[in-house]
Image 1 (cartoon, rainbow, N blue to C red):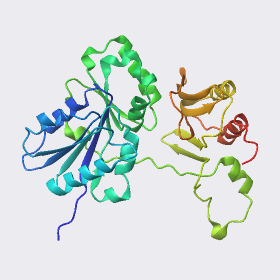
Image 2 (cartoon, rainbow, N blue to C red):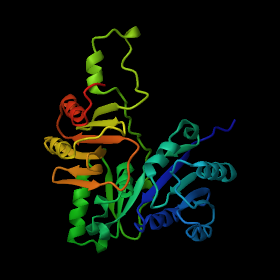
Image 3 (cartoon, rainbow, N blue to C red):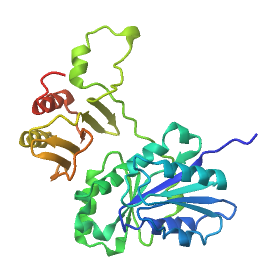
Image 4 (cartoon, helix red, strand yellow):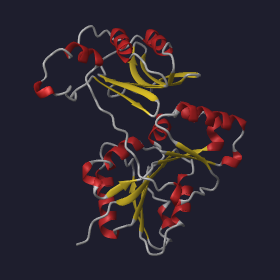
Length: 338
């Protein structure tokens, strides 16, 4: 009886022009002759260009999804293309290159669902960034670029030989901002990286959703059936927290209707001692704002569009009183009762 093996799957993300296709081309040159490799590519436009050179390689199957993003809500074309790629060619290794304008978190969430677990073995997620353009500070402004860094296990900094002093400074700030979860950073030119350097299984980040701490406090003395713990919230708001590798992490997802006092909210967040990073998209009295802050740079931008809900995550190098912070959030959003 043949046992179906999950295919090692590499996701290579990166902003437009960062060099991810160059990295992919270099990796494909390392294919053993006796293996069949496959590539699923995503072009935001309607004309696929990159597959023309891949088709020239022996033993590499290619499928493209055109005219949109692999990771958007309507992912049926991606699901069909991927299923056909796996069934028709039965590859021994798979590479997925989403468009530089895609949302990789949604893609990773989709491919991590139970229906794909027997077929795909997701390896370390790669994000390629253009080292000699870091001085443009694109990372401070673009939501997709920030998300690509968020999901990365390995960050490849391309064009290292062309980086100037400002680029080096911006890279240091990026590394300071993304200390948790830990990431590997590698500088390279011409996409030159070995398969062995990226061929590690991905360890998914586990987040346990819980009721708000304030709600838990109200119900902590109430009897629970069979000693059960707090149930997972089915609706907003909810809270999560964890302590991993020396960092303390907490987040809040809150309804879109909650609106925070802008100035007071920023003062509260800036007053938190020992934070490493604060990320947020919040509905305020001045509109929706994006926060991407490290201890030396508290970046606040007005968002171009409303979000589906309010989100805040704090990463700290010291233990925090999360309940006290939550109470301030509730007060600033006018939530006197839950």
